[in-house]
Length: 220
Image (cartoon, rainbow, N blue to C red; front, side, top):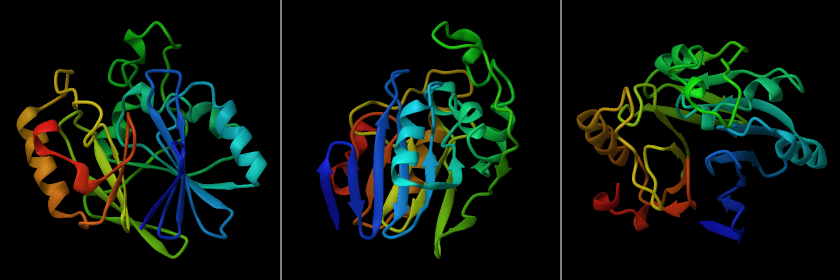
């Protein structure tokens, strides 16, 4: 079941999810933890200014269990280097994403005036399709979902799904970037929907979270 306390705080079963909206391209960063746990995962720290994340972590006395990247675009990973200076943590993503965050042209920071050109300095850990990582006794399952980018992935934690730019309700997934692939995207959506529980709640890269039952294929 989903409880929405406000537009930036959600509870799915015993998982608490806090949303921060970046001033850089309005991308979402999600901070999630199980009830009673002091460890959090962070999905897509895309704002180069990580002060809001750090303030939240400090106020709650949270430690970072791991950081997860849904894909390689700079508006989803630009805060990692700054965040890593606070505390070391593992970073999980697909193998292609792991390669592309090391290239300013492939993470697109080379082409964007709003931020400094960068690469992700901390080491990343590539996680394969349908592989899992333990988090507080639960398993985070990785689904490789190329289409928006070659390195795109979605992360499933029970009924909670972090979908990046692969599955969004308020925005149409851009498929006109270098590395985008419309056929791969259609296949990825099919694979994703086949692997999601009917009561899933989607936490997308941009726009508001939503129930899977609200999603329309025509809008994807």
